[in-house]
Length: 225
Image (cartoon, rainbow, N blue to C red):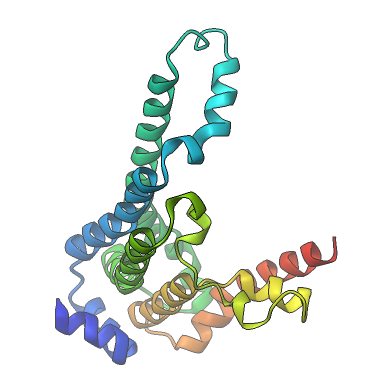
């Protein structure tokens, strides 16, 4: 496991070729899902459900069928629902990502089965998930809970490189890029290229570039409003 992680950091193209040849995905899939869910669950208990879910509970209380419920019960129910969602989402998202790649393979002029794609997707999620989990738990431990929010737990969006006062447009564009998310996309593209037997450049141009362009256009439009 440690050697595999080192390879994904130092030589991801070579490591993903080995993963695609021997597609074992259960362990990285479960680890990635757990590491992505753990800090979100910890954040609820550190920040507090009242701050996080106050507006949602206020809307629920408007419902006549729930108006007579103790507020503690409502907060408990919303918290449990949130915890279920953050556990289920990464667990489901990884195989769904692998499945969604299958119909794109003809565009890339490559071939791959579900197992190799599932393996590279699961392994591509693991190093960023480790980094995100460690960073989030550190932020939760050292920060004042009264000043925390879910959006401040991974303070590595690239918008900090160009402050809004210098260029609102560039700031908004770079703010759409979060380090661990960008790393995950990069590793996923390396994995797809290795599994499908195509070059990284082709995978980037046909899969990632359109999405990046769309996101940056939206950010640019929002900066002008």
